[in-house]
Image 1 (cartoon, one colour):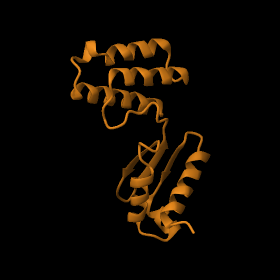
Image 2 (cartoon, one colour):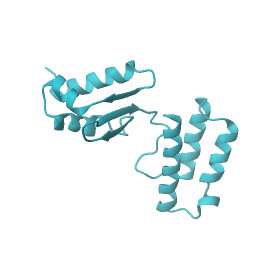
Image 3 (cartoon, helix red, strand yellow):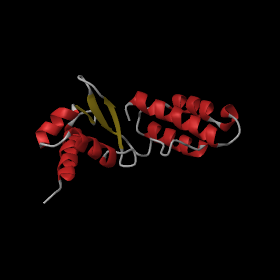
Image 4 (cartoon, one colour):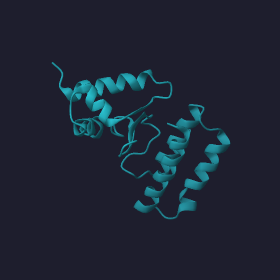
Length: 143
């Protein structure tokens, strides 16, 4: 028999896959009521099963009108660990080009802006900034 966390994960993944834009927005309390559990159990499932490494981005807003938004993303385009080398960023931009999400001109402009020549000498701060820029582009494109 599957655990409660497994059932919640499977339920959410099915709803995400049925969604046209691979995004799901639910209320944590309503989901907890559906499964007869505490909202903290939903939080646990989101934190452990819907991670960036698994190909998901989760956003939440607490309070009366709060929600949880889960979005499936292409792991090839989202930088991990908050840092991204110039080579990794350029490769991810090429993936976005191949998927038809960016034009050649847009890719070249972004490469210029994310280049070592513009951002300065190699280092963790530069890689962090590059990752933030790439993340912003991916969010804008909803990938």
